[in-house]
Length: 366
Image (cartoon, rainbow, N blue to C red; front, side):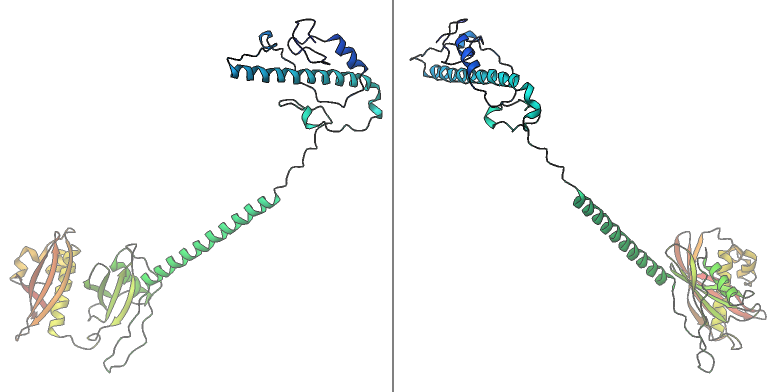
């Protein structure tokens, strides 16, 4: 049959024309007398197709065009069926408007009645699933954070323990027991707990004060980059004790140990030991810019030399007693290694006995 509006071919029983969308009177009348159809979802608006595609004609010379037109005709046929179902659904809704309260809940429409992009009417969709709980995920995150915090705490304790053990190794030192004249060993002197003196000399004074020997005098005997050894004793007397101080990693000095000197107390000193002590006092006085004290330890001809009462002004940084050679007349040659202005040289001091004790009478550079 043909559409009364555009005269294009339409399927038998169609309610609307697939080309122009006009209603077909005979089909519409038949649709009104047809039984109610099951409900269908609300359709999208129909976009009328151009008239040029309404009446496909076969083209033997162009098979592709013929197939395209065949598919277009099939589409128009299905569109017409959809329009008929739409009209029947609208009629059904009008008839059932007064019976809504008595009708059971609507059943979701069949899948073939829903086109892509359409929204199903209210009441016809499937139930929305309940959101999944995330309790397990939250518990897992909390447990992971607690484990991480515990690992960091254990690592911090291990690092702190290692640092403490290293500090104890740096500051701890064994104190040897002094040896007396009869060969017996006295109880070792306990090292004071106080540490951290800015200089080696301050560390020695603190150690003597802790032993109740704050009035003792001391002089440097030898030193290196990590330690220094001082001789100490009562004023106007012989050296009695040897005090060793150690330099820590932070640059501060602490007590390493105190030992009794074998020639201390009432034991007389050998000429070589007395000569070494005089040269040591002389060099320490020069280092500390006590020129007058240094000059008091010299006699002529060396006392007439400016070197007998010089000031180091910080340029005399280190010295070491290398040897002492006692002569038959009681004099002693004392060999030293001295660092002046960054250069190290070896010097010989000629020390002779006098009524006031051993004094330096000459200096040679060999």
